[in-house]
Image 1 (tube, rainbow, N blue to C red):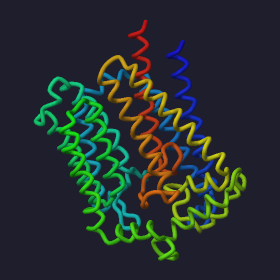
Image 2: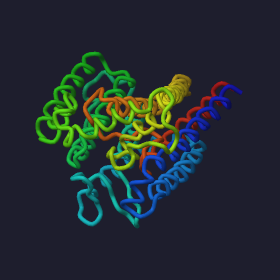
Image 3: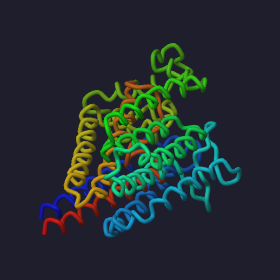
Length: 366
């Protein structure tokens, strides 16, 4: 009964979040969609399509024995690398705001970097569970470092420093969860931390973003514009918000209001109370996923569930930190909420895997 209760709790929370996300995507994008595309439902239709496909994936993967994913670990890597390379091929990869992050296939847009996060978790979980007895050896860790390194190089070339950092965090987390030594943890953490200022310094636009984060009012019409508008949006929401669909910042004041900065619109329309409720719901979801990991029937299931929980937690924290001006701007979507079909499909697919781990744990307790 406890397993069944947890199963439906996780499924209900995820479906509730995606439904709320669809409402907020429409609210945040209706004006800009009508202005740019002549259809106020442009982003909403795409989001609903992603949710429907994601729900189907979540249901199917909740029934699919997660142990079978092990034998496909290298296929996930190969397919992901191919997808990441294809974004650089003219006619297949599409460019937006100077970044090549999307594929256009049969009229559908796919963001391979979103696939890479979950492919990396599956590969790491499979490889580390198979080699856990040799995990203290540096030689054993080389395949994980090689796969993660290839993913990171291809993503930073798009360029997308935020997703690259997310992939690095995922790799480090999976290695620690897999049981690497303290020496190796320090060995990997120091170069990763040192790479951040180097990557920032290599691109002038990243330096501008850093300076805008330090003092957005130094360039209120330039790099600091988005953060200032985000803070206006959050500040005007007060305790209870201005009301659903009543955001003023969505009228082309706040860039990417339907995607990376949708939390600003949530804050404006539902207020501090709405934001706190949303964060509590996300925390409850992560907590349930961690419980699934702790009660998994084997090491592979535990690493899978904990890795997926980590992606959801780290992206939620980073996204909220960005829109509140707590860290420099990055381009990570808010899980289950931000506009983006690939993102919502992959997160729901990840939940499906976690639900199957939960179903398998039931067999162990019977």
